[in-house]
Image (tube, rainbow, N blue to C red):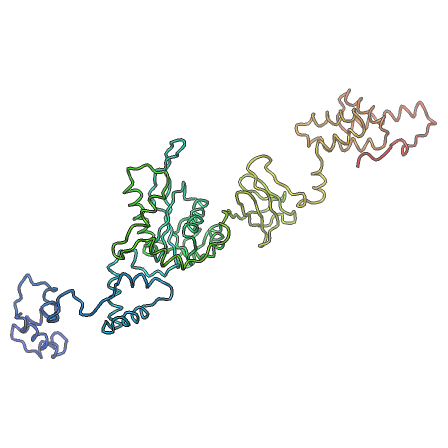
Length: 496
């Protein structure tokens, strides 16, 4: 229109059509045609100041006999076609062929596509992107917390709002969790899939640390626990590009709508759960399409979702760990054994609420019941070297049993030795040495030496050996010709 105004100005000053075409760089026939149009509607230079470009264009180029905004051909229900287009395998060509089958004098294919695109551009922003049924679900946290009341105690705690929106139907899942940490993040996904009764092809999360370890335009790094959950359900994870909110505009608008329904409309109510607010969201009739999210989900999206696995995913935390020199790995201040041949090797540790699994190069090498209290070390005897395994079998009870097999005085000696040490284990070697000394004497002699040792406080191997040696020397001095058959006096081997 700016060019047309200049054309009228030059014509009003007496410039010929040929000269106007040269000045404006257009064909002479175009100049003549436009000047004829202006003369037909009574326009000449100078134009009225209030004449806008829209009004000027309408005067010059509107079709005679057609009311503005009125279609000359029969139109389909564009809202129904927008819904149909989301179904798998449905294309614009198929919809146009069906339309022309019902209306042979209807619009051609190109005009049909233009009008449908124009209708979709007038929809709410959540419908502007093309999302096939069962293809994507967008997930995020709302960023605004909601107060939740404990029914039993009346305590009020603020919770995060997890929101998930399916791409094609905008069917929404929302729940409150106390944190945005990895267990809550993955747990919300598990409950989301159960709520949808199926699994879409892709999950589109924001670059939350619980889901994405390293955000990147080209190669985002998915948290391993989050990736294992996705593998369990057979769904792909495609994080939105950093600082690109349009990549997840579906969930952004879903979050805003959820905040409006949950935090806005129900701001004066007491919250015990989000189920009522969630029904309000999904049963709300979308103004442009004339159907609710629930109706779209049931008719369009749910049939396209993949089926759920037989069991829900059990949250597991994955860690890299280095095997210590005592062939244990640490998790949350507790230690779990692995085969001793893996000392100083790097292993993968998988922790659930009940078990600890340890993998080396993809092969599981150990499994333990997870510890929350009691001894800090969980050791499988099969993981120990043979020498350590024998030592591990030494216990206070075992030494007492050995001593009891000799006699009560020997049992008293062993008990006194173990009690005299700050830790019973520090007396194990002393007890072992004494019991080995008693192998060379009969039971009566062993009992006598044990009683004498307790009496004088000789609670070590050196004292017992001295008592035995002194007894032998005294006996040899009084009975020099006596010959003692120790093999017969020793009796059965009660030390094994």
